[in-house]
Image 1 (cartoon, rainbow, N blue to C red):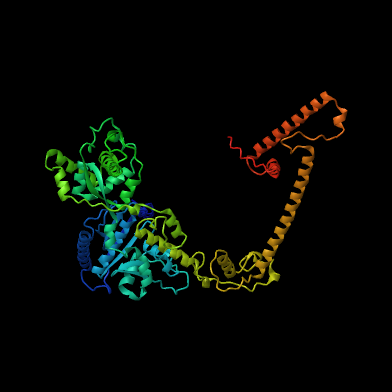
Image 2 (cartoon, rainbow, N blue to C red):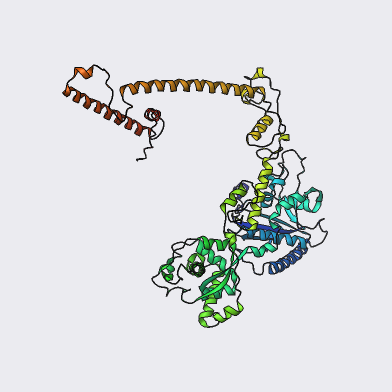
Length: 601
C-alpha cells in the first residue's frame, strides 16, 4: 500500500504543461463579460454564456457587413467559447502571416464589439506582447514597463483602459497582476484606470481610416489564367491566398508536376486561357509580382511575345498564379487545408458535369473587370531618403514625391517626427527616462580623488551624470537646457587633463619616430637602394678608377644580386605581414608605395 511519502513523490513528478508561445505572425484575443459592479444573480455562469452568445452573433454580423469581400492572408477572425478554471469567455487566434494589416482588422472588429456591448472587456496581444502599448510607447507613464504590463491593458466601450498600480507614482513598479486580480479590479475598483486620450489615440492610430481602409488592403488586377482557375476564384475569392503562399514558399517537391515534359498531367493546363479580374491581398500581389520565376517546361511557348508589354505582364502573373494552384493541389504538405479539400470537390463536380465552367460570354457580361493602379508598388528611393532625413514632403525628379502609397508615407513621416521630437526633448534621456529621477552630486572634493565612495565606486572615474548627458546632447546637436558651456565636475576635469597630457606625450613620440624614419630614408637614398629606376651608387668613389672593365662588370653583377635579394626580402616580409602593419610595409609607405593585401590561401 502506498504511503503518504510515495503519493507526495508521485505528485512531485507531474509538472504543469507550459502554455505554448504565440507565433510571431499571430494575434490572440480574449473577450470577458465583466459587468461593473458584479451582478448579484443566482446563476452568473448562465448569464455570462447568454451575453457571450450575443457577442458572437454581433461578431458574425460585423464580419458579414464589413468584411464581405475581404480576403485574409492566412486565417480569418473567429471566436470560440472557452471555459477555463470556472470562467467562461470567448477567445480566438488569427495567423496573419506577412499581412500586418490583418492584425489591425482584428483589433478594429474587437473595438467595434466593445462599442456595441458595454459590459465586455477585451484583451489582445501578439508575439511582441502588448503591441498596443508599443504603438503608444511615446506617451506611456514611466512605470509601465513590459514586466508589469500583463493583464493591465484592456479595451472597453471602444477605449483603451490601463490598470494603475497601488504604488505611488515615481517609484519603480514591481506589482504584477494575475487575471483574477484584474477581473476584481475591473468590477470593483473603477478608479484604478488610466483614461488618457493621448495614449488611446496613439494606440489606435492605425485604425484612424477604418473601415474605409479595409477595402484598400486589397488589390484587383487583370490576369490571364486557365479557365478552371478562374472558375475556382469566382466561386470563392479567398482561394487566392493559399495559392499565392504555395507559390511563394515553393520547394522542389511542389515543382515536380511543372517540370514534366508536357502539360498532359497538369490539373490546370495552359491551353484554355481567359483574361479576368482577380482580387489579391496587397501583400500577396507584391509576392507574386516580385518573384523571379523561370517559365516551366509545361508552359513553354504559352505566353505572348515579350515585346507585348501589357499582354505579357498579365500572362506572366497568371502563369505564376496558375502554378501556385497547381502546387497547392499537388504538394502533400497542403492536403490537410480546408481550402484544398473544397477545391478538389469543386473540380470533381466539374468533371462529373454537376458544375459548368464559365463561358467567355458569361465572363464578359457578368464578371467584374476592375483593375487597380499599381503605383503603390513603386518606390522613389530619393523621396524615401528625403523623408528618413526628416526633410518633409518633397518632390522627386518627376514631381511625384512618392515612395509607396499615401498610408506608407504618412506612417513614415509620423515615425520620423516622433524621433525628431525625442532628439529635441530636453527632458528625455537616452533610454527615454527623465533626468529628474537621477540623483547627481556636483560637490565632489578634488582632494578625495584617490578614495572610494561608500558603495565602492572609484571617485576618480565618476562624474556628474547630468552634465555628461548635457555634453552628449550638445555633441549630437540636441539643445541643452542653457546656453552656457558645461560646468564639469572636478574629477572629470582632472581626468580630461590627464588624457590631454597623454595625447601630448604620444605626439612627441610620433614626432621622434617620424624624424628617425626621415634619417633612415636619407641614408638609404645615399646607397641607391631607394632608386628603383637606376643602379646603386658606389660606396667608395675611388673604386671607379681602381678597377678594370672586367672588375666593373663583376661589381654590376653584385649590385644586381643585392637589388634582387633586397626585393626578395621585402616581398617575403610583406607576405608575412598579410596586409597588416609591419617594417616592410611602413618602409614602402614612406616611399609612396602601398602594397595590396596578399589573399593567397
